[in-house]
Every structure is written in C-alpha cells, then in structure tokens.
Image (cartoon, helix red, strand yellow):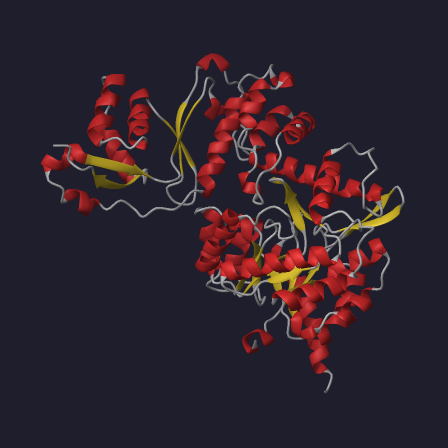
Length: 281
Length: 256
C-alpha cells in the first residue's frame, strides 16, 4: 500500500483524449479505463493503452460483468478481463455493486440490488468466484440509484461494507454516487461516510451529475458529463482525511471537455487532499 | 418474499414495458423506473449511432432515432460489452419498411460493421520475407498464406465506398454518385492502426477469398485466373506482402 500512499489524483482515460495525453503528458497520478473498451484483440485501443501505460499506472474499471445477476457468471467476459489484466498489469481492478442482465438479456446499465441477506449471499459468492478466477482482489463500487426495493432490510452502506468483509474485496467509494443516492432516496450522506471503514476503501471516484425534474419532484442523474458539483466537492472534503490512503479519480464520460479541464478537476481534488496533509497531526 | 431471481426477471420485463406501466412489483418508487427504461434504450441507440455514423448521416437524426429504437426493441443486447452490439443492423435495414426508398442503406451498414470488426481485430507481425525465400520451389504448391486478422471482404450492389467516403467529416464532397454505377468488391483491412478500404478486381477478390478459406496459394491463383484471365497475379501478390495484407504462411502437409 505504501506505493499508493502518495499517488496523485487520476483521471478517466477516454479515446478522445489519447493523442492529447501523449502530447501533453498531464501531471496526474494515474489513469483509469473502462475494461470492456479494451476487450478487442488489438488495434487502436490496445495500441494506445500500451503506450500510455508506460507513463502512468493504469486501473481497470468494469461496467459489464453483471456481478449481481442470478444468471451464470459470464466466463467469456471474465476471460477477456483476465487477458486484459495480464496485458496491462493494472494497479487496481474494479466492478460495481449491481446487476445488468437476466436470462442472457443485457441492459448495459448498472441496476440496483435489493439490500437483503439473500442478495448479499449471492453477490459475495460471485465476487469470490471472480477474485479466484482473476487471481487478485477486486474493488466494488457503490452506484447511483433511482429506485429502492420495498423488501430491502439493510442500509446500502451496511450492505456494501458487509459484502466487502465477507468476500475479501475492497471498496471503490464513489463520492458522487453517495451524494446522488442520498438526494434521490433521502438519507444523510455523512452517515454513509461514517459507516464505511477506512481500511476497506481502495479507491475513490468523483464525477459530475445532472439535476432533472420528474413527475414526483427532483431526481439527480449520474451523468458524468460535467464538472464535479460543489456539494460533491464538500462531501469529498469530509471524506478525504478519513480515506487518505485511497487514490482518487475524476470520471467524465460524455460531453468530454478538453484534457486540461479534466486535469484541472484532478488538481482540485489533489489540493483538497493536501489541505488535509497540511493540518498538523 | 420473492427471490432475487424473481425480482430480476420482474424488473427486466418492467424495463421492456411502456413508460405508462407503473405497476412494478417490489419497487418503492415505480415511476422512477422510467430512468432505467430510458437509460438502456439510449445506451443501445447511441451505440448504433456511433457504429453506423454514415447510415445516420444519410437518413438524418430523426429517422435514425426511430429506426434504431425499432432495432433495439427487437434485438436485445446479449453481452456486457457494447462492442458486441449491432452486428445485424444491416439485415434489419434491408427489411425495414420505411427505408425501402434508400436501397443502398444496408450495403453502407455492412461496410460500417466491417470497419468496426477491423477496428478491434488482433494485431499481426509483419511478413517474414527471409523465411519465404528459404522455401524451395518444389514446396510452392503447399504454401498457405495467412491474411492479417483484420482482413474482411465486403461486396455491395451499389457504389458503397464512394457513398461512405463522401459522407466522412473531412470529405471534399462528391456532388453526385450514380447508384447504377454498380457495386463494389472491397477489402477492409487494418495493417497498422488505421483502417483501409481497398477496391478489388474480380480476380483479386477471388484470390483473397480463396486464401481466407484456407486453401493453398496454388488453388488461389487458379481461382483468380479462372475468374479474371488477365489478372496481374505477381503485382497483386507483391502488393499484399508490402501492404501488410498477407502476414504469414505455412506449408500444407503433402498429400502424397
């Protein structure tokens, strides 16, 4: 963990920024890619990744494994992930506390699980199978959600923490997602931060969201298409000292800004971290 | 209490039902399920839009939106990797009632899928000419040449390549393309990182098609010359080597 201790804030790497990254060599600590975008056998995605990883540590962030699904675990998907892992030697490998398929039909979205003992048993066993297959620990990310289930018996933070403890995985704590879900479902985001043990968190995410008016009021959508919101920066300022060892990343997936704007967001995250470091112990 | 399995199959059918359907079991705030209903449709539509930019440009955004929505409704995603989605869009377009006035649309879509396939295909080492030089002439008949993994052949009834080129963002613009100019026989290949479309003569097409099926050089040459008696075999073979289209060879076991 010591090598990670001083890792500066990172950014999500997207194809639109490949050339800018190679030319500008931005001062960020690391870069994260969506694993599935590199599942192809060769060509530009893999070619650029091979070049960029010479200069930056890389992490693999999966969006399509459908860990929480009651279908069989998708071996073909896992095999591609393992091959990619061997090729790019990532610092971290992560997936989501969600499901996205049933009966072989994929929605290619992060769908929420009910927070029940049954669902926990299920996802714990799936995470363990995945870690066995990959031969390494993975991190599991909390998601933004828009609905809850009437038969849930656990709070999300307890479900997440207990899942990590039982499966041996780490947590990728997405601060924006905590904020989004706290507004959508009316809970206190600080309770979430309090409940998650620092030693389980291996990475943090920050991203932009969109406020939307719907039939029954306001809903926040996890859109990753704009700067991190002020409320999320405030929440991050609270989280930063507690999870001081966890590398933090700026995610931006659509309506991409120029690379320097993304780097400026990472620099801001870095400054919030360092402000914490400046306080004498 | 319903099992997780039941919850997921119920949620799945709710996602596929119309927006007005709010009777979703177990969901505390059923109207909000529309966010998920929209999300997955938008994701798959956008995937088609980025896979088929020329089709989209040809028909316009509004028409494409409708047509992609119809495709998504009938063709669920079967993979957690969106790069696997949309292969059958060309076939769908050829039967799509509203697109019948644009008979070349499915040809263009086939070309765009071939581009996608080549984009993600494996890389290859460059051809080892010294290894070939060491083969004795008696063994030539056993030579089986391997094409670059990205290589694909596409035929069309219409001048698809010109339509494709004139609809690229950096296109100079070709004012009129006559549809009765005839179809194309094309090689789609990615020798390095950039994808190329190469127009082939009938003989060249037959030559590569035969090699792709794993036949020997001998058979490929005979087929090519049978199709096109004046086919410039040496010239085309040399082009395939220098251009990174043929990347390797092996010797077929002698049948004698």
